Amino acid sequence: MNKQVILAAAGIITVIVLFTFGRTSEPRKPASAPAQEKTAKSFDIQQFISDSKKNLTASQAIYLTSLENNISRGDVNAQQVTAYNNIAAFWKDSARLFEPYAFYISKSAKLDNSEKNLTFAAQLFLNNLRAEQDEAKLAWQTDEAIGLFEKAIALNPDDADLRIGLGSCYVFGKGRSGDPQQTMKGIQELLGVVRKDSNNMKAQMVLGVGGYVSGQYDKAIGRLQKVVTQQPDNLEAIAFLADAYAAKGEKEEAIKWYTISKRLANNPHYTKEVDERIKMLQR
Image 1 (spheres, one colour):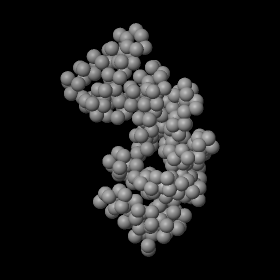
Image 2 (cartoon, rainbow, N blue to C red):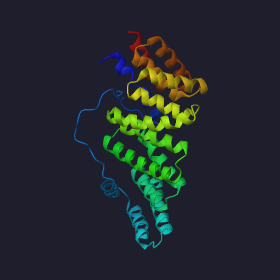
Image 3 (cartoon, rainbow, N blue to C red):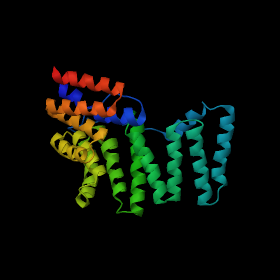
Image 4 (cartoon, rainbow, N blue to C red):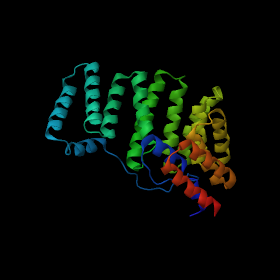
């Protein structure tokens, strides 16, 4: 495999996964062409919940059943929203499983249909999907997040953060399928934000990532340079900037930004990973 390709796949996994989610995964190659057709995997949340129930203790199962019974007993939206939230809390606090927790938070938010709760649920999925490596779960989480952001935007069309969130779903979610057209959907959403406010660093950051993921390295570098100028301690932006330079073959710049990222991260595991990339660049 080409050295540049290996080095170019680091930022999203190393920074987001290591520092946001605390686990590491194999890096992905940025997409530069539509992915080959393949049988799409699907994630059945209801089946997942059913299977997960088999691992509950007897007392947990009894308690969960009582919570589920409250859904059918609720004769008004508010009661059903409360029931969904209680079930979500069970899966989060007692069973410690993200997927059922997020599923019921989503059901609650859709039923409540308030911008606040829709945004919370959408962001919950977005934060998790950025590190998701299971393709079926990634597709499910991305679709859920997109649907939730779209419902929130319908309530508040002018909210820039909601637009950034929706665009991010395509960049970090659907764009990772290898289809640049999906990444471009996100980029177009984000461009709408920066046209109104070029100093919106959230949008510029995700646009930089989008450029990197779609193989538009010059555009990625321009966006990410703008972010690190405004936010010199933004580790994620710096790591992606290093990767973009590495992918473009500008080794000295890549090493410079990798070295800065190591200093900011101050983490032995991260330093080891980045040192390996620097060695590959120096070969």
